[in-house]
Length: 149
Image (cartoon, rainbow, N blue to C red; front, side, top):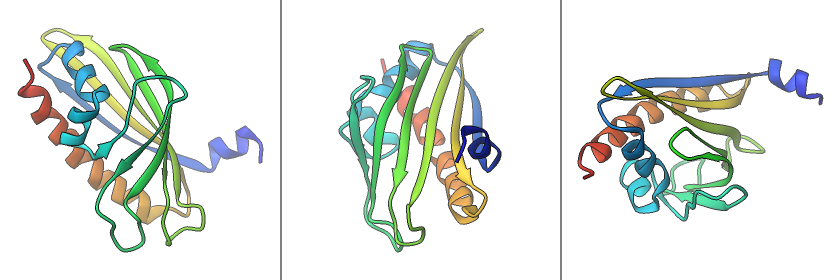
């Protein structure tokens, strides 16, 4: 499959929030393992391009609770991107997407954009689940950032 065909056969989920916190604070919550565990899932993340890591959650029907990832982009306080491969019984290959966080300084804080790209046209249930999940996760992220010094 050519890259052009892949691009036209997938869609993205985007969540944008303006947060009353400096980009440095938002970046810490996105890149420090213990903080990530507080708003997303337990992990062995390191902000190093090429680092392979896992997110771990309790198993659920059609999902073993493990998401295999690899860090793709690290631009401190600006952009973080990693692959997201959630294996499960529902789809033969699981959900394979890319998650990208972009931070833009704004007056009084940071504009955060989260995009999860690469959902196939036949992955409606996964797309809807991600919409729900990311809204919840980004809300929890805001609470974690608010309590940082």
